[in-house]
Length: 101
Image (cartoon, rainbow, N blue to C red; front, side, top):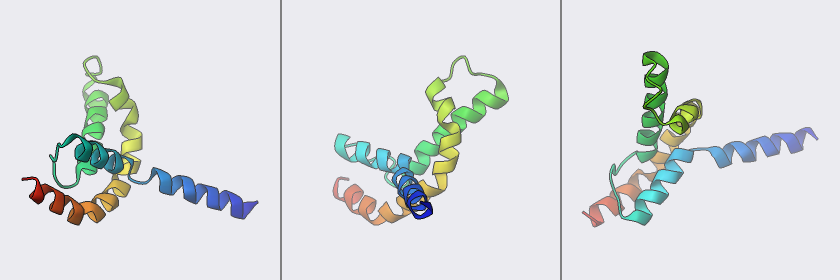
């Protein structure tokens, strides 16, 4: 039973690894938008974290997107995983960006 639970945990952790990176690469390439060309997952995570921090520290939640604020803790957890995945995508991003420039 322990082996099953450990395997299940590893599968879930790997499937959630780098969510922002996976999403932004897919959206950017399919829509023809190649900006920002490098590390788009980190940029997306930073934007979500910034929205959460702005709301928490400055109490300016009325004009903020509540979905972004609620995703801030997950973005903090996703940040290092997106960093790894975005780093692996740098050669691919460079080829695609400079071929479409």
